[in-house]
Image 1 (tube, rainbow, N blue to C red):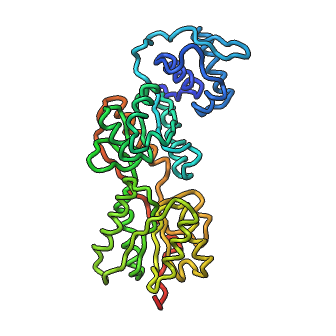
Image 2 (spheres, one colour):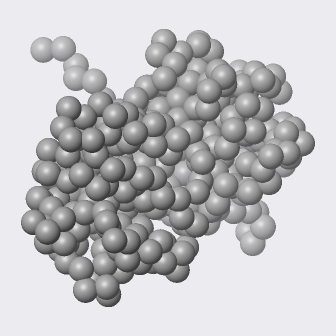
Image 3 (cartoon, rainbow, N blue to C red):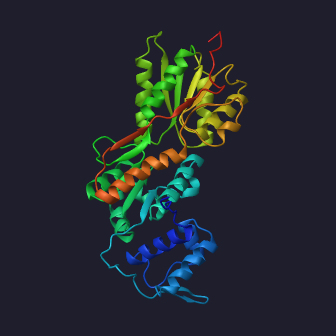
Length: 364
């Protein structure tokens, strides 16, 4: 019977990543502290210490009580010209400010990259996404040698800079027209087109898309799909409207109130964010309107808390692990060959009808 393939232990994988980061010059002189390394590599203190002990036995590092671990030498085969192995994720705000589903795919990607011998580095900063992002990015990128960059929640200036700089980069999100970067995102155009069709099929003719004023490429794609779904309807011509709101609970609540005070108020709302779905549903309740008896709702996005909402929200579901796997494939292609077979990957999420979508009130 042939020998079965063996999985490398987590300690062995951690040793490999530490050796490679030392080889590529990510750390010079001293390693980061144990707490920082545990956070970066997402491993336990026991796993990290076992890996550090192995590096000490190999005389690659030396432990100094109360100070840390000093790098004694670059592992054999390493040189100052070795290619970096870190993958850097760049976003406008800290990780803890992402929606839960977004943070989950980041965690999934981190684990998948570790299995491939790569470390995920997460950086954030609003200056890298401003209209004059070029200068900030010119300083940032050389400071963090990376095998590949991942740009999420990217603005047009940030995407354009990476495309023109020729830095290996993939967008975790949609791409603005005229920018040549590989990307992975949900198919927001198809999703919003389907949402309008579902509302029309339920009998709604006055439909509003509530979306924040991000003007990100994916949101623009969603708006285009929303209008396409309305124009392509074979039913009676629907009254559709796109309402932009500022990213605050107060402003969104005011927008919902104004809509519901109209003489011909909408009977169905498509809400662009799962967080704001909660705001809309509770504001409707404050106005004495019930979901779906008076107003139907669909959430464009999914998050782990939505299944706990009553009535169950109609929404579009994609598992974070599936998104991370698609993104990993593009990252590895960029690292290994510098080219990507499929430049624009669009994931069509599964529609969960829930209980928040029903026929409009008879008087509507």
